[in-house]
Length: 423
Image 1: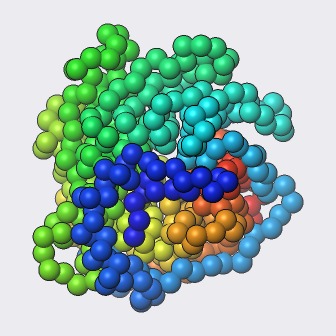
Image 2: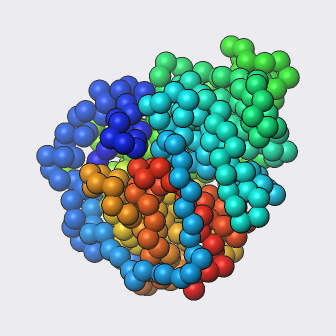
């Protein structure tokens, strides 16, 4: 098991992220136990919906593969000057923003890519002082929200696109080296939610107040306490709940347990409570395999999909039961490629794509995306449709119409995958 923020940048330069330094001491015991007991080593085959345990524990399984999908025009790759973490496109597809992490100051920030027909070019890079990671756009696309390691950065999207000065509007602190890694906006843009990997919290920021009054001590209205290393974040379609993955369950650290009992968690946070009473906002919590790192919701919000990186697995949970009966919320588990991270639902939720990062292999060899049939996966049947060869350490997935954007962190590229070319 590894810390989410520990990554490798191009040309052999090591980028030591702030969240790694802060999280290392608090995770030391759990890391040593998991390493010594081989908590994430291969074990049994994937659990199906028919045989699923009430909660998936931290028992690894062998990574699997499926036949490669090779079609003309399926994928193009665009080289970047730093290691890309996440990407997001404007609704008209003209602009793509990519968060870059680099030991070179001028390449550490937001890469602004301009699409003109079939061509893509790097327009400029907006430097940021922290460690750029997760991204979100306001509903009117006038502002870009960035998880920047030390907190949240707010950028003027028009100035970012034009490359003019003054693009950075606000820097909102999340505390002392929180390791802010993902961000989400409430549907009305009133609040920003941010996962603080080393701070063990979900931060709530009154974004409306920041826009009208600027940053003040009242901008951060509270923090929801979570387990160790909260990372993934998804907001329900009805704006009522947040789903957060944490890599390690804190309840395990003080008890004597076997190797298969050191999982992470999927936590449900009530949005209204988070805005007004953060300390009592958690309304559901379930174990979610080894190092759960990302979560995505179905369009209806009834299913939460989680990549369990240390289990080489994709997990599915019933969101209603996560709140009312967490012990029985687990639906299914599907073995995928090594160390899955990013995921995205496509084709009206009939298929799902997972980024098999293989991030700890120690090399720069190409990796894959795995294409999955959702109906088959939920039924516990064989569901792998094929794989797509991509760059090294495929990390985050985002949709731009019929194009899937993928950040290849170690190979410093952005893949653009034409979904119409998939079988």
